[in-house]
Image 1 (cartoon, one colour):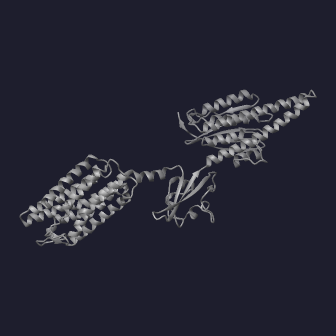
Image 2 (spheres, rainbow, N blue to C red):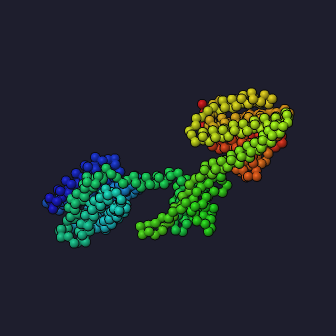
Image 3 (cartoon, rainbow, N blue to C red):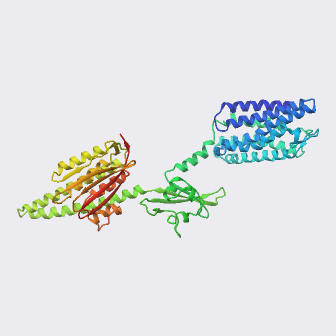
Length: 538
């Protein structure tokens, strides 16, 4: 037995040194402590055998509990760190797990005063606390085995080898100790468990060397999967077979206008009746949260266990709001462009036929005006396409004052008959450069379509910490209700066309740049308010 104990110490020290070299890899330090506890127990048993007096044997038995108490805690922390359950290895959790072992060490060193660990006889029979620490040790051993069992069936051969070697390292001394406690081993009252540490050490050495215990670690797997789930661009909900939400990521919570704390544990039909409407499945349909203009493509997939039984389902919400908005914009462009161009072309064709036989200046002027309108439509379409292109790219921030000053001056030169006033914005406000096109369009439209006898346009700025509002007012004829439908509804019907692209350019450009637009219009004039995010100060 002495030779076996020396061997277990030697193997344990070797494995501990190899683990020490791998710090601070997850599980390295707990494995070092585990090896230290096993070596301590083996060494104290070796000295116990060699002791020539009962007092000497009792001393080494008592101090052996320092290593014995360390082993189960170190094993549990190692197994949790190695398998990726780091949330259970915080200082608080480790201290809680070490309370009973720490009490055991104290009782062992003071056993002569209370006899809770051993009954004071020459045979050192187990006392009441002995069975408490024994049960606790096996409990921590089982808790450490559970996460390792998940890796035994891993598709990665290295992880299978590592986990099997670690399990052998635990089971060998565990079985030996059980046989000793049940009286199945004739060892004259000496616990032979440390002898089995030789096999444990060999198993741990195999895991460290052959299976590269810390060179190929499964620790990131669980955290990576959770991180991917949390950070995925789609919203995802996990439901059980009863339709109860058991997990969800932040994007799903935002789509459902709730929080994980409020939704988890509740039925989906309670949290979002629209998403889980009676008689409907979540597959292959579009979900629009009430009170929003967002749209989500909903897909569903079952969750099955190893027996191919359905134990739940995953509902994925793919945000297609931008796709829907782009589809609406293209439909509006198509309808309005087709309507306006076709109308102007028909007028041109009719008047051209009349001019072929009659010399009529009025018809010629009408022809010219329609040609100008076609040119203006083409310019608006070009600007809209420019907005779409810039919306797909990373844009710079520009000074709001510079944008407005340039837009006002350009409009004043083009429409000198319009009185344009501008209350200068603070020079240090930065906004998205896309607002350059939007502001230019709003100010120019206010002047171009102002048919008042004394036309005027007023541009003012209302700065804030996070947003800045730009107000453009005029005393023109106002905007027709069917024109505002483009902004209010986001689309046009075939029977309700807008006469131009100005509103579309304003609404779409503001939306792409992350702002909002509001219109107040009547027969006395129009007030357009552009709400822009402040991109910075400088």
